[in-house]
Every structure is written in structure tokens, then in C-alpha cells.
Length: 258
Image 1 (tube, helix red, strand yellow):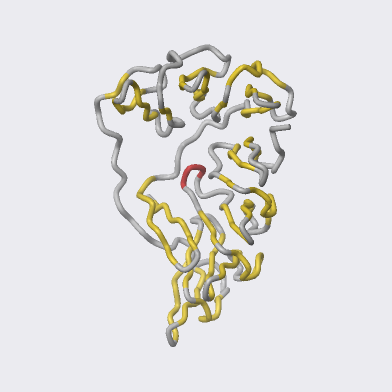
Image 2 (image 1 turned 90 degrees about the vertical axis):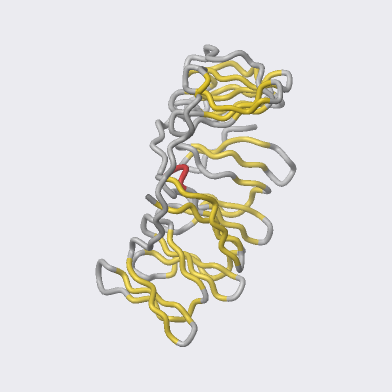
């Protein structure tokens, strides 16, 4: 099990404990044209009609949609799983989603039935899987378990994405190293956010007030250009442009809004 961390400038905020989510990557991506949302395939061909006020990503073959200010859930064929009557609705996670109906908040399963059992708690365990931190004269370095690479003790903080990247901080700025200890992005980032929603893939980085995404090699999947950026869920992530247009991108960086 791994701890979910959010890297925010000088600080480090623990967001909770969870295993990497076992997601079923949806074949459809939320697609917006004008003020209407539907779903497209990965070639941007509209498959489910543009009829919603907003649409969420498919997780475990279920997605939330919004109409007339209320939320419901549909399956991969566009068929309703629940009525559109929730005032709040979350994306599914490990077989359950949290909804609010007439002021009451509770969880439902993938067929819309109310759940009475609490979600499974993840045991706490915090570690760096790539190697060991080296401390010298108040600074931090890193020694990789595999290979002979050693990162000099010159950083104020070191974290990892639990895959193959190290996030390092000097002062207020973050940079990225690969598992060979080589710099892939210099110390120019204001924040880096790693999420377990997709096994810590595609960390979000902020630079000069704009957000982008990193790829598995620690370079830019999408260079910082968005006003807002949410973690990837499966193979898609929700973003907002500087002028307030919302939409989704896929794991290649392709945008699904016009």
C-alpha cells in the first residue's frame, strides 16, 4: 500500500492512504462541443450524443452525467443506471461512488444500489521504493537500490511517484530526476502533485500559474498551459483553459473539446 502525497511548494500534505486504483480504462472520453457534452472515442468521433450539461469519465464502465443541475449515472451504452436526481455525485472508486440525495450523503454500487458497509480502509505504510535517502549536513541525497546511481546531497526535500521518478526541491522550486539520477526537468516548478488514482501516473506540475502533466520519463506530456488540471482517472483527465473552457485530455495529451 502507498501513501497519497501532494507536493505543494515548500510543504508536503498527506491526502490520505490508499492502494493504487484498479481502473478499467473506458473506451469513451467525455467530449464537449459548445455548451453540450457527450462521449467520443479516442479518434474524437462522437459516439454518445451531445445532450448533457457535463459528463464525467467512465470508471468501471460507469460515468456520471449532469442534466438540469442534477446528476445521475450511465453505462457504456448511454443507458441510465440511476435517475438523474442527485445534487452531488462522485466518480466511481473501487466499486463505489458517493452521492447526495435530498440532503443525505451515502455510497452506491455500480448498479445504483445503496451501500451500508463502509469503504475498505487501507493500512498505513510510507516508504520510498526506489532506494534510500542520504542525509549530509542538513541536505538530502538519494541512493538507488537498483544500479549504482547516487544523487548528491544538495536538496531540501525528496519524494517519489512510486514508479520511476524522483521529485526534488531546493528552496521553493521543484525538479524531476529519473531512476538513473539524471535531471529530466530543472528546478523551475512551483508544485508537483502525484495521485494514486491511476497508480501515480502523469503527475501534475505547476509553473508560472499554469498546470501541465509529466510523462513516465519525467518530461512534459503536456507543458503547463491550463488554469486547472485534475489527476488522470484511467486514461483521461479533466482540465480548464485560461479562458475557463472545461474539457478532457487523454494519455497522449489529445484534447476532447472544441
